[in-house]
Image (cartoon, rainbow, N blue to C red):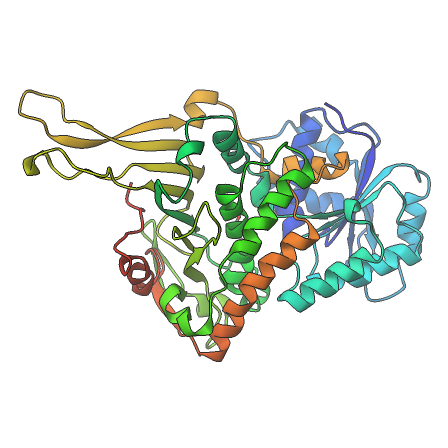
Length: 485
Ligand code: BG6
């Protein structure tokens, strides 16, 4: 359904995120007929561009990121929605120009998307306020990571909160917009099959892996000050953990879901400095090969001589509550790994007693694999009998649900869903202030502990599954990473 008319203002409008994700996603929704005539997209940046030059830039830089080959007329029509305002967040100039552009439609929904360094969030909000641009229909969208530690996240939340009410603030974590991540909610709460088993009595452990084959690309400067823990674990991986571990909310409303996620974040066992070397691993990629292509290491990509930033993290987390006590959650993410794959593996406990003779082969525990990307789907690994007359031999057999085969549709990019949720004012799939702060509260001691105890950044060759210490981390507990299917 079409949303209400809006002006979508992107701070950092000429940047990478805008060109790769935001503009293509808005176009896709335009194609689907959800964007009303007259809705505008206003890029804000320090570049001296007029609307025509910004449209030309989008044509050159955003078009390659569209899904398939777009209808030229539809793309050309979309481009006419684009405007540009030159403005430096740190100076007073430019704001009156933005105010003039927005003035004719004061009642309209306004979404201010801050695709800038988080250090600018507070000042941009203050200037929006001073320019009289924060109307009741305005919303602000904050890109992650929100700050670089708990104190900076709190300061940003306070500065933004001084101008916008909480219901106007949309803290984005694009993983929550992924179809397959939302499907996790459906799997857990629209089926009665799994819920009775979804606890420490039946589940041995959980693995959450988000593996990328890309390196740091053009984001070296940002990434080197951020690292994998802040870039991925503090937000995306913890959000996935929350969706796996949370109690059933009583309804699918924004605060009911977020209240349950918050309880999980608050139940995460703090990792002490003394145990960091046992339960966390930091790594950094070295030259190697991905799909047979030689690739550089991290410092070469960065153009520096050295760096202590991690591009890989593996760790063991625990949720201290009745449902999960004693169940390890192994989290792992990294750049330049062997294969692009994001998946959640729920490994059940083995049957309590094996009735089969030794020559039947081992009974492997059941595993539920939720594949978030690519090849989205769900596989339940069961044990079965090897067909044939030769005695009772056991063999693992997958029960496989491939979303592409079953539903056959193209999945919209996560941003498509989330950007329209902003316009609709629905923040269920966005992080609330207390959630972000609780996530930092758990992540920050890991960062400070690493620094205080000089945790080494272990090298791994690009195209592998990370440093061998990550394997040791899970094997110490008698378990293995499941990345071999
Ligand atoms: C972003 C991180 O939030 O997520 C990137 O900043 C990462 O470093 C990206 O590459 C991964 O997203 P996706 O949707 O490609 O899995």
